[in-house]
Amino acid sequence: MKKKSDIGKRPEIKLEVWKVNGTYWKFFKEHYYLDLKHPPAAEYFVGVVNGELVAHVAVCPLFTAKAYRATRLVVMPEWQGAGVGTAFLNEVMQYHLEGNGRCGHKYHTFFHTSHPQLCGYLRNSEKWVQTGAMLFGANKKRSNASIVKTGKKENGITGCGYGGHFRAVQSFKYLGK
Image (cartoon, rainbow, N blue to C red; front, side):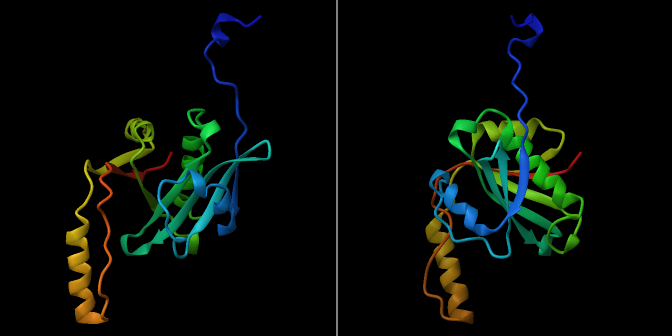
């Protein structure tokens, strides 16, 4: 019989973090909300519990800002809410802050998300600070016009654009332990 103090406690989950190559993305892609190419110069990490892939994140250099940028965080649906995603994200961010990432830089990592529960966790964690919030989508036409204008000057790009997704995006910076 369980003791009253054990009721409501989560079972302990042993999470392993593996540095992998980009080929692992195929296991997580269907659970990601955007369809983008692999980020350039990214390092890839997966979270594993008892041999099962449970989480993925890519970390890219953002050396112009003396930082890294984490992207493509996916936690498998059956593992969401168990705390493995945030534990995994924190461990990978700490790894980079300690100088174990690309080029050995001890840089902070920036991360953007639109997931309400993840935003709540990051906002209330002492390990993270919120750096921005855009509560509506960007104007894709304006982005396209800017790219076309720049392209005509430099290399003849005739169109594309970012934004227009109409989702709230919040920005965070990992501060560490």
